[in-house]
Length: 165
Image 1: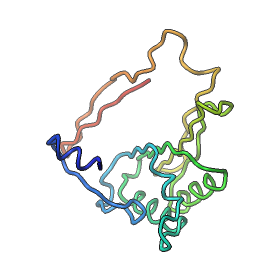
Image 2: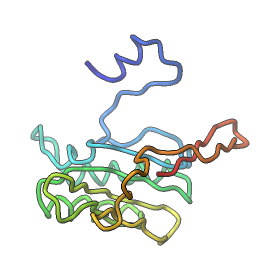
Image 3: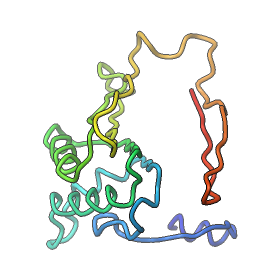
Image 4: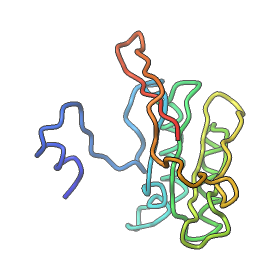
């Protein structure tokens, strides 16, 4: 069952969209202040049909994403690359589309806990967040849940919630 179907069944309020991100993002320019994705990006590296060209699909996605993000936005993608060639392909297509940033690897020495994040920024080079390692992970007893910090209302009526680990 698709998430859009689940949302309809549960009568979730808001707009829903179902689309192929390899064909681009159909949103107006500057519509978003950020984007998050878990386990979606690596699927653009696959050629499930003869018409699917991974480099072209990634380029279309990143170019359209760059256009619909505001000029000080960030986009973070947790993904599971099959090999270093996929990491290079994804990163190079993002940079060609205008993004700054790079790949962050949490727990690089662990086979089970290792996580890859593509961290992208639209407003020029900025400081990258630090990756988690066994040495700088949460101290024992500290909460690993996000803590609410603040909320901001934008002039257009949208709401931004700020959290911290």
